[in-house]
Image (tube, rainbow, N blue to C red):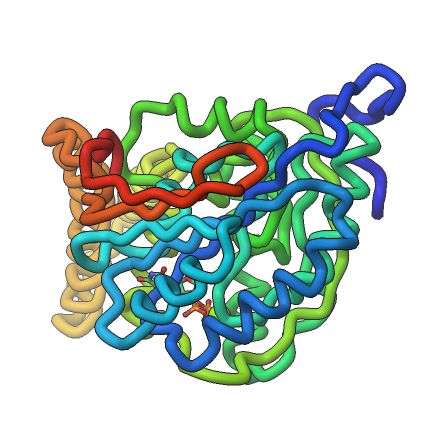
Length: 344
Ligand code: UDP
Ligand code: MG
């Protein structure tokens, strides 16, 4: 389906004014991407002339331990469209993308991974969609090269589970690769919360969304930064930062146990059985009920921890240094220190 989806079903392109040529910001979170970052920049540069927009590229170095930052600075010294934001340590991809959104000056902003799994050529179609009046043109994965069957199945199940848990529409088979209009970026950046999961927040903001289908490539260099435990904690954030449903499910669990208790009483009264339950049956019941209660407490604890983090209000990232493209046409370059660490 290539029609705009969500709150405003159709868009009259005549009513939407997009700046001509306008500035497109491309936000690229980078963590230990020394083996590919130069190739990534070359690919982005190769499509820039076809965009009919001025372009700035914001690379956020998320505390890399390798030569990624050095390579980015070299690229920036040769290309004034580049801005480099250097974090003081690794704060995570969500923080890096949030920093990019905050620093971006563009009329539209694209978020893309640094590893070329999301082909930069797709941005041309995203810009074309944006020009027709769509506010968020999101990449939808038709296929995913280089992923194991296990990862494909778990990812597909997770997308669908996650979409059902959200109190507002969230597209499936979609990652962070998307173009957002300035109005969407402003809405998301204005949110006060520190701990962010952008795949939630951008759909939360509303506006008109439309998919751009593409084939996701395999990583050709470097390796994924997501271990199983990191993926698990990301999945927990994905659900718990935006959905109250896990708490509702605890009520269902309580109702289930109450029903079991009532059934037991009715059986006792009706058949007045004198037999005792075997020890193993009792143990099994006890184990099941204890596990369910512990899980319920843990779920509440997960929410409490997230409340505590927000109450602490620590920034989601700390910037060591910024090397920014100086103006809207991206013709100047200047160094800035870490004066603007207002979020992450
Ligand atoms: N990334 C980041 N900080 C991190 C982990 C990842 O900025 O702590 C960047 C990474 O360099 C890449 C993007 O986020 O540009 C996606 O990471 P990765 O390719 O490892 O994720 P996958 O494609 O395996 O889901
Ligand atoms: Mg990747």
